[in-house]
Image (cartoon, rainbow, N blue to C red; front, side):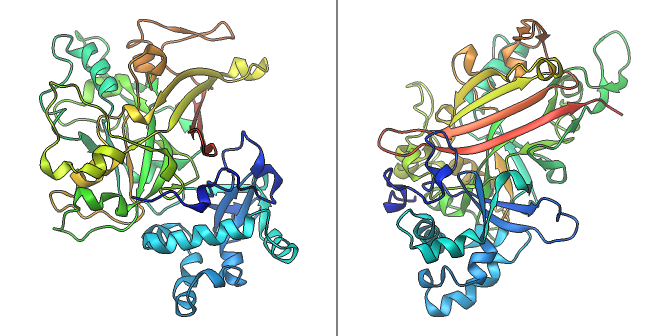
Length: 447
């Protein structure tokens, strides 16, 4: 578990003036990582490793190559680690031992701090690009993707629609439920999402038909990337789980509810989920999240305690994350009429029944070999209140309670032209607000 240190000091300011804006997602206390191209070079140049600071992106390979961080690595380590920053994905940094990432974080904080010398600023300035001039890509090379179902409020709501007398199945409070998603269809924020086609059996008296999905939905989730993996046959103890987690991002696990209703029995999600998953481009590291740790979800007195392999005092007291999540929608009509995106819901990862450490430990508990860069997601994050429901299935109660938008339009599910925008941020008294950026995608018609 990473500790709070001088890099989290709320009084730190950067000479990159936009990083001092109280509303920025990327103050000097954050320093999330990303992969990018400079606009116009995406077909000619290799992707670059970047660090977000205010409204700028720092070319990490460039400052490493010019020796600006040499003083923070031991003499024999510089040659060892410099090649890590010359890859087309963040996997080498994810694989780095946490102590070395702490050194990297300390070095970046030193160079970007307002106390940096004029010469240091000048050198770093050569490697800065306005974020408006870059194109992002998926940050890690994702070999595998697993999506969990860890919000008890979401699971209870969805279960109530189909099993009013028994919303939660008996295993829910014992085991983190998940399914294997499709890594190849994970796309970065800003990518258009084509409405999928699939089998629909809306009329139980007739055979299914193959048509564009009618009930297209989003799911507001938190994602996290595997750092160091484990060997096949080896498990990961709960006390070591977070040593294997690199950082977090926002995830929109798009879902075709009408296709899902027909196909999910008896084996669970398939084509209703695998057509697209959108993620935000930034990896907010576990080091940056240290001030925003909280205790694990407080279970009802009648609930069972986690089994021993999923339980320890550190996870119980600090395994949770206090991350605020927001979902907005902007329709084609709203864009035409210059109406700002409309807030649909707010939720918080504190309401997850299982922690990300428990999810990872359970995943590897049977000897499944997790790999550096793999993505896991929490499942829809919902809270107790209607305003905290993290998908349209819940907000409209399976389409029976349509939403009215500022444009006068109504929505039961998403329509072509709708853009869904997700945001995440952490706030705590005595610390600087940090954010996760945006995760957005617009629906285009089926072809």
